[in-house]
Image (cartoon, rainbow, N blue to C red; front, side, top):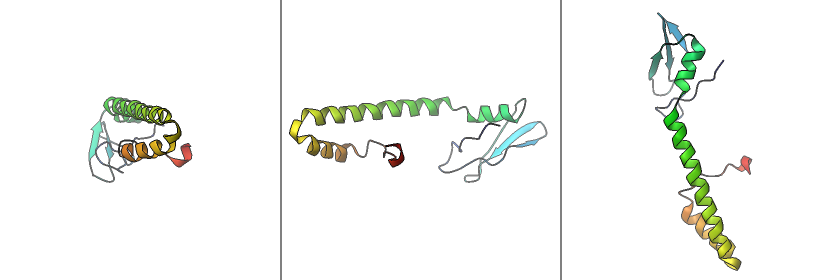
Amino acid sequence: MNELKPCPFCPDGKFEDVLFYDGVFYAHCDKCGITIQGEGADESEFIEHLNNRPLEEALQKRLDEQTEAIRKARDEIADMCGNGAMFAGRVLDEYLGDYLPKEDEDAK
């Protein structure tokens, strides 16, 4: 069965089990309390519809592209600095730190 994505309306919220009542499916967020209802041929179809977030996915893709562009520019500037590359890298990391997501240590 499909896994429910986290609640799109609040941080850290997750949908509890899907309920079916009187021909309608319901999913309730355990954090903000919102209940989303919808129809579908079965629970799997309802979950697929609930998980469909094209705008969120498009924004995440654009964010990933911009993050990569910033990292590439940082590396190119550091390379142009020659012997000062380590210093330039630290300055750029400090300056750009607020604009780049923190790298996951496990991903390295």
